[in-house]
Amino acid sequence: MTRYVPVLRTKKAEWKALLELTDDVRQIITPCLELLPRELAADSSDDRAHAVRRFAKRIRTSWGPRPILVDISLLSSSVRHETVIQLARAAERYSVSPIVVLSLFEEPPVYAAARQAAAAGILRLALRVDYSELEKDDAADYIDMALDNLDTSPAETHLLTDYGVIDVASPNYEWLAERVPYTPSWREFVLLGGSFLRDLNGLAVGTRAHQRWDWFHWESWARVARHRMRLPGAVLRWPQRRDLSRGRLVRRLRSAGSRADHPGTSDQRPDRRGMPDRRSSALGAALKGCATSPALKAANTSRPGAV
Image (spheres, rainbow, N blue to C red):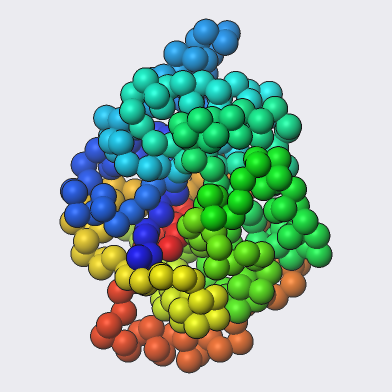
């Protein structure tokens, strides 16, 4: 089954949106929380431990015991190690199920803390890889090193690949399938991408329609996943748009793609300008198939979302 992964920042509106989701929507999504520094604002280690416990309690209240991805990449490297340790302790205390999301370039103590928590069965592990990293010749080597540092295997690890901003030209999923090692073996393979504007600069106050190209391109991804990647036992099923709207996710998270509402955090999505063109050459056929197929069940995204 293909699940929808909304990528959310830990702000008041997003917490409320999770809390108000209906049960049928909860069953078909796995949120990814980008943990903001202000969530853990503290003057000492004791204060930070309290902040992490408060964060875990919010997960329990808004989402419950279901698995949830927690991305710590926006935190300072100096506090990530302690955050992972405290998150593991808080997960036990509040009976939540975090999947800690790490980059390929964490400090050794961060990997060690995550490795110990995973070995104890408290946390699960995920890696988040940017498309620009996959374009490097040694991408597979770095993924292998991260797995070694975590003492884990692809079968025990979730892999998140981040395309960034998706526009009229579809990402080249065939290229992606070739660049990602162990593609059929990951515990869960997540493709992130969204069509939200980079920020709200230059937009007049009022209502604006913006084309959601991410909606149109997922059928191409489904074809690759079925035929090129041959995921074992995978059943690709797309959530209906009305399912997501009924849970108020789309309405409440309509601005989640914007970086302008959190000026203290830089936009880490890649600028595609100047990079090799990894977009699909079969754009017209893909759009025609997606636009006319009555069976299309597309997954939506919220800066960025995923399938």
